Image 1 (cartoon, rainbow, N blue to C red):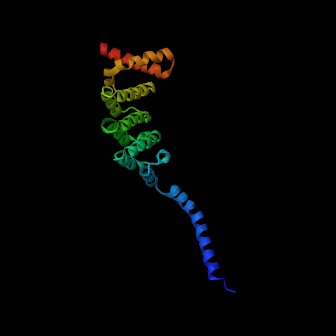
Image 2: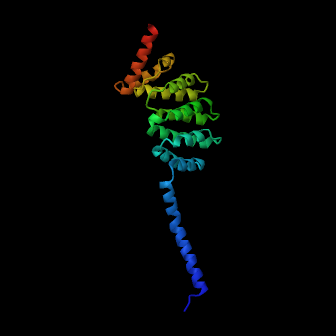
Length: 212
């Protein structure tokens, strides 16, 4: 006896639902694991999936740089903010190949129309663990900015870099007086801390150079 048309239609519908239930997660899994990381990162930034974009940037290769540059210049403020976080993740994992992104962050710190974005760009530069004349120039200019919030972030960035023992430009000695209160506070709290010692050494060198 042949199955009824209703029976066949019911079976096909059930099979279609089953394939949809199984196939959709499988397709997503394959896409996320086989697609180029630049495609995935672009999709995440486009949809403002900040946490996912951060994780993707950590493991992405140099092909992520043009994508991050593109979205750092996006017209949407929140997209730029999220992209800065993803950029920081990339820089933290790829110190040697991050110069174009360091330049982009310095430009945002100088020129972005959003204060929130500018502050985030400055703080994200803390992810750079090597000497950078570009960061030094950025800090030097922003330490004299009219915005107290920007001056604060720039000063914190410089203090962190000096505290880590990163070599900085002698030109920064011109603003060493702004760093001395931080040294006095730090020496009172923890005089044996390596970061405190590095800051003290830097300021002593600046004083010696100015007295020559």
